[in-house]
Image 1 (tube, one colour):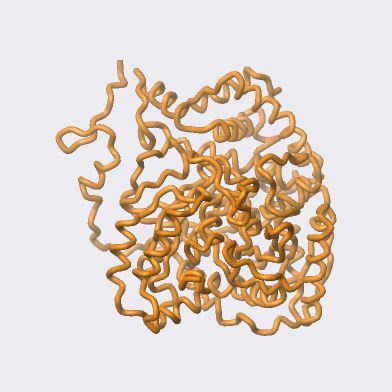
Image 2: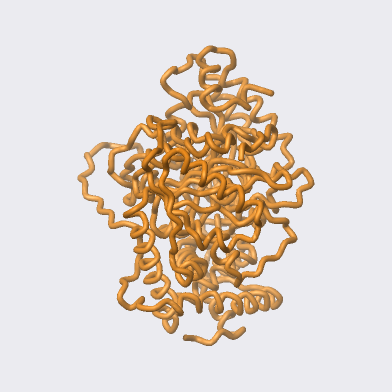
Length: 489
Length: 98
């Protein structure tokens, strides 16, 4: 046990009491990162992190992130630090500015230890497609199970207790799904709540900044710092921000939850379902009103295709600047088209190319109405249904995933309801831009699984209040692969 | 809708300015087999004509006037950091006009 294993709250108290220093924490985080075997890191900033930590000598009592080590997914711009988005096409790229979230964390004197791996350009959900290869789940020392993606390295870093929190990004479920597989709290707030300036875009109508922590308190405190209007991101909201931790542990009596019936019905794992229902019953005992609601099977079955069409189409256009001229290594060529052709052929992996072709196909003139525009219309209908449910309920609750982290070798039936619905419903939060948080629920074969709460737009404070109540029910705050706790249910 | 053939996929890749191996095109063609079935799920949804395509989760407007504050521009050495080829403090580009 080291100080770095403490909860964020305890760690802050230890720093203020000068029992530990930012330098000691930074040394420990770097040591653990270098020893880690999960292939979670793109870059470790030994020199920069140590130099910054050395300047932090006077603890700031009212600043809970003072001196706290953290990691950023490698698709956030970091000034002077290589940033590749785990793609060969960005090998050697060193940004000249910090993403707003990185700048904000620097301003509160959190210490960035390094950059974490991701599915290439954040386009994937398995944590296997980055240019450094697979990222492993710290709960599985045999390295047979995935951690999920795309924010695989950030999830692994927090789960392996290398640092208390890490930044990620979430376009379909890229923070919340790996959080579920890694026994973590994974938060994606309302679209526009956190500035995306400096986050490499994948599909801007769906992209969110998110993050991983080991408990709900840390998640709430982080949003205090990360939220807010940024004039450099025109889509960031000017709505006032809250003190998001204020209502933690307050009673949730009278709150109303809609459980998505079809999601649970399509899960095959009876053990997971049993624990899920037990947690719902425990919420009822606290006075929470629970309804099992029908969403519409046809709409739920169309989620994945809607997501793929919209996200691939947007990505095809967004990543057009990765061309070997504006960004990316020069691979030769007699004409500018040849230069781009050679750079893009060498720079992108097969999966990314396939996704771009899918996007391009959906955008072809002959297909645009039937595929792209139809998917966008369907998104509107899906969001209408979500908001209809949230008119009468404070939250929508469902299992985050139908199983524990899958084996790398495991194949799934891509047309089954378990895949189309239970494995892919988290994109509802991206379609509607609503705050959505994954929380640990229990373990099976020593591997974590979890649930997801989605709330109304900009009601993060209430979402954290409910999350803290749920966390008390499961007893799974502050867990890591180093120190898994016994689930209460 | 355009029928998916190997030639259509190769044409799409070509327009995107990259190429793939024959094996990769084959994988992609097979992927489209599953994807088409998944996309049919959208086709089954009734009444979508009544909905406008949704491009962003919310309407968000940005109307503000920025204060006229002088800012330090990007330093030359920073601007040149990512350039693969430099000469006389400028980015040197390969000749691409024949």
